[in-house]
Length: 398
Ligand SMILES: Cc1ncc(COP(=O)(O)O)c(C=O)c1O
Image (cartoon, rainbow, N blue to C red; front, side):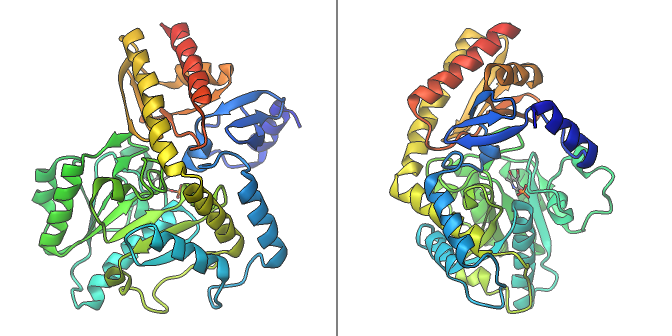
């Protein structure tokens, strides 16, 4: 099928929940992807922070193939090796103790909210149910996660949303202090806000949030769905800022492209869940977990977390140099590791369209933030080529 045939078929039969770009991708290899008409792209979006190792990494392909030939699905009623191995990898490379597997980021956050409430319930604090999230946060599209995502445009039309969710201005510790109380069950924070426009929350703020949670006996949840697993230059983002949360949620890059989410927790917090409290049919699926084990082992053995830090610094500095060249178009370049946003003085859609035309995949978040989330395997040459395309696209707008 050609690009236009594929687009026509999709638009005829798939619900239109996305404003899709006019590109039909059919193949990927490393940092490159090709559309149905054979056009080659440099993929600096990586499936929105999913393809940590690039497309179709041989270790991931092999793990999927091998596991699919052995056991595709069983049930959480049975023990299964890939899930056990993956949980051990996550625990041994972080500072938390136990893992619950699910299928997506929103589902991981739902699990975290339920765990926080049940943890307090089991301790006899039945009124301790309040969950606080921050302005510009994005925690997912299910009703609970949407309640924690204070963005009117995506909440509109879905009310009533689950109760008990409150919001404070991100980065303002006094604002959080003003709404924290003894009824607070948990505070959820993205250490680097992704969909909100690539905002790095300072370590001093995150330390103060931890202290407030301790003061009120609330659990601290870090949503590392976009910023975790090496993207900011440490395996868990919290390790890079030196703040230990009680719960961390993961998804996106964990499965090397297969759908999987995880709720990681300290032994203390994890005790909130007992058999029968929570579950999901596909959570810990053997093929998804085998792909995740291969992804995590490759990340660690090939030092790709360090590579994300080094390449992130390089790419961010190259993009920052464009700010001097286009001062009327670029307001700020910011980010951590390979999670980089270039805030424009105008809507980002025309720049993105030009980049697509020139063969670079990226995206725009919060309307004006041109965002790149490339795989950790990019070389300096890849970064230079991407920056050259952005430069040419900016020149066409200037
Ligand atoms: C920080 C964060 N949390 C949660 C989610 C929701 O994840 P999913 O789309 O897998 O439900 C996302 C997705 O963009 C995200 O960036």
